[in-house]
Length: 334
Image 1 (cartoon, rainbow, N blue to C red):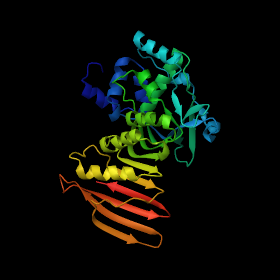
Image 2 (cartoon, helix red, strand yellow):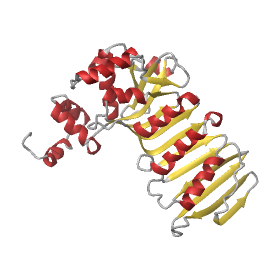
Image 3 (tube, one colour):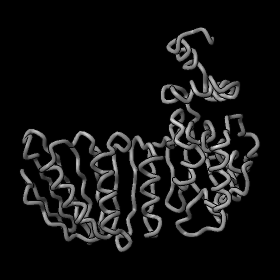
Image 4 (cartoon, one colour):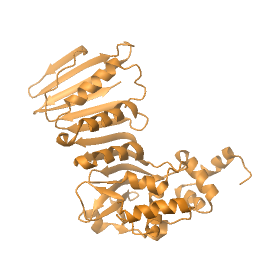
């Protein structure tokens, strides 16, 4: 197989399921790098959910603990990388960032049992603070396994992986896409000290094919963080098809989005669908709104309209909103 061109090797690899690919990856560095290079075209092991649970979560009591040694494989650890790892150990850099300061975190993976409406839970008890190089190797191997899986849903509303530790462990290895492959995911902005890391984690380590739901605590969202999140909305459409923002006060995001839609010369990188949900209804209809339709019912007010781009009036974004019980929901779609 070594003598075959890469195209032929790829055709062979496409015939293998995830477990077979995993076995081939462990044979030598050549096949490991080849599979990592084309992993987007090859089979992935699929799970229903990925979450970071604390020791009080019910999944922890019912889940099966995975033997960490079972996921180890050989890879090159040169002196330079080993020195960086040792520095991370000495500084006690955490693997997890706990939004609610949990004492212990577990990586919880759930898979639906075939033909049954029940789930099996599997737990990875990875060290929050790796104490030596051996534990760094364990974390490094298991993260690579997780990056090569696919998940229907991922919950990062309580904990996230520390983006700093991910960068240290993989040291800008371009052969491995350092992203969790997810259909839908949820994250929560609570602690002002963690917001920047949550944004970095979302931007650099999540690939969400359907929906990313972000819950904002506005009192902790600074102007800098607002701008960082807005930058994701207008530039990361290749990673996030749809983003759902929930928060107490989202009128600023609404204003930024409507102005950008109307005045930008290039919206090709923009997230395709943006949903906003706020408990405050002090949203003023944009002066740029066209073809406005309003329907008032007993407890609900429906509004539909369009906003056109001033440089290309043929490009229009549709807006749909519902106001009820003191809250407002807005859908923005190209």
